[in-house]
Image (cartoon, one colour):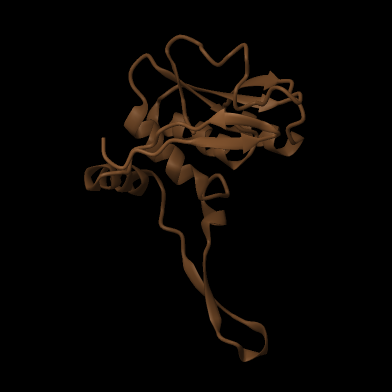
Length: 162
């Protein structure tokens, strides 16, 4: 593997080890492009004039994706790359990442479980349920987070999607 990076990060007052991530190859990028293009329409780029005639900015309207966010692109690419027969993926999120994972799960036929905090937005939970999410509610405290639920982090046959 080339371009491997790992390290440490300070989160909520605790030092945690980060995972090593390989730099994507040209083949990885092409596989991701193919899977995303087969399942999502391109979103438009529109020009928006700045106030006072100070130029223009370009806005890519990713809010027009089926989940309302660009996160669905990464979820499709990751699940297509790492999903395998008999493997259920697990994601910890109650937001756009969760919506992307559940959407990708349905598109690719890869079962997914989403771990959400007890404090998750009712609107996001409703959207996840509409997409058919397998939800696990998790109580968060100062020493735990939905990213590492103690009871569910080591389910056999499940792979995390980050």
